[in-house]
Amino acid sequence: MFRKAKPTIAPLPKPPTEAQMLEDLQLFHETRAAATPQPPISEQNLPTLTEESSIDDWWKVYDASVQQHEQYFDHKTNAQELKQTLQEMRSDLQAVCDKIMAEIEQDLSRLSATMSE
Picture 1 (cartoon, rainbow, N blue to C red):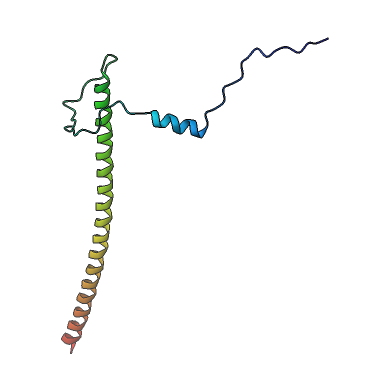
Picture 2 (cartoon, one colour; picture 1 turned 180 degrees about the vertical axis):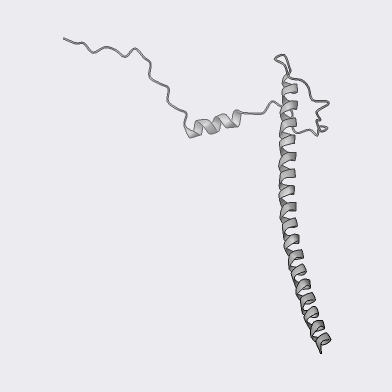
């Protein structure tokens, strides 16, 4: 009554094996120029990106944003370290202040005891 129909959809391709992926990675190479020292990019010499911008302009903007991110992260880390140092100094100063106040109170009590005699 019913006939078995042939599959109309092609089977999905098998995923690559690990060896095939490693082989592909060996063939991969970066086409961008090697790390050549470039002058720091500032807001003034940063190109304006449009749809017609060249790949180099896009890379300049990308490098500038990465550089700004690294600078921000460095500033943030430095600020956190300075904040911790400031808190430690504040607690040290408070301890010294408490010690001096205790000595003053002790001197005042001795002075009042001497004056009352």
